[in-house]
Length: 191
Length: 205
Image (cartoon, rainbow over all chains, first blue to last red; front, side, top):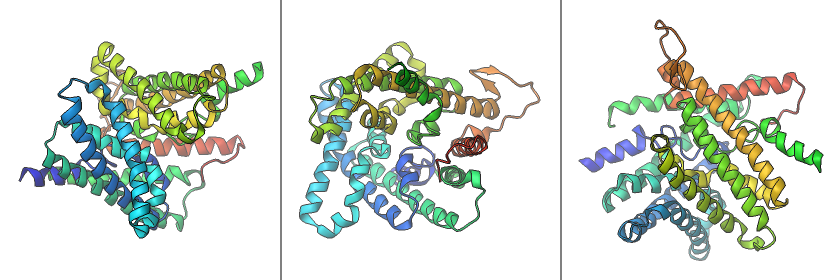
């Protein structure tokens, strides 16, 4: 039951994008079209789960037992950066279709703070292995949901008459704000 | 020389002030600006990293092979961020608790990497540090501005000091998540209006 609670909380209530404000640069960058948003969402889910697993293992078996927690930032970013490179190479070799679908988004993910943010939140909350898996996958799915929904909004925005000074990023941010308001409605479900 | 110096120094304060002109580094701009104090603290921490990382990267620009430059930049930046993290825990503990995971997340703040790649990798150390200073201070000013707006109207205080009389009902909405997005959106729109009024080039679009 606790795991269900954790899952709902990570996906909706504490949505990584709209309530924790992580990963906003790619959020505004790739959400102009629904197709690219799907690609980015899939890539984020994939990399977040992998990165969380690796950083969790390093943090639990190396950093914490040897009192090296001050190296956390450095290790995590290096793990994530090299993981992204490695995933790119492996995907290229193993599955051409998957690489074509996700490949272009992979380099962007290194600087996506959602991946690093999830890893850091897990370390901060000191979750166990199963909880870590649930938390990272549901957080990433929450990110994906918000990204895809937002891309739908932005496609509509392109054909509607927006005041001149609000065009572009300004109106996108206000739309995101209204979406965040809607997500606040989930607050009663879990905390 | 003197000309490029002043130009670099002032560019970050208006012509490419982040996160408005240079739409980078939005995550901390949204996340930590609940109050003016948090905004200022975050801005100064980022400015510190930016100055030193620009200096270090531009001193090493002829040594780092271009193929692995991004990875090397990340290592340099991560080291500096760890230093900031430890210093803040030692001297500003309450602030570092409030900023939480957003301090280590300076590593993935696109402004730092963006200035490293866009400026420091092509220019000598001194001018790069000036660029870091100007963009960093610009970022700190913006974050403080956003924080001030949200804190004044959302909580009725500024840097913790009450500014309104008792009868003022704070708009709590501004302090919570949606308020952040809408405040920055509104500020961007204001800046667009201002740019158009001055007849400057319309950047966002």
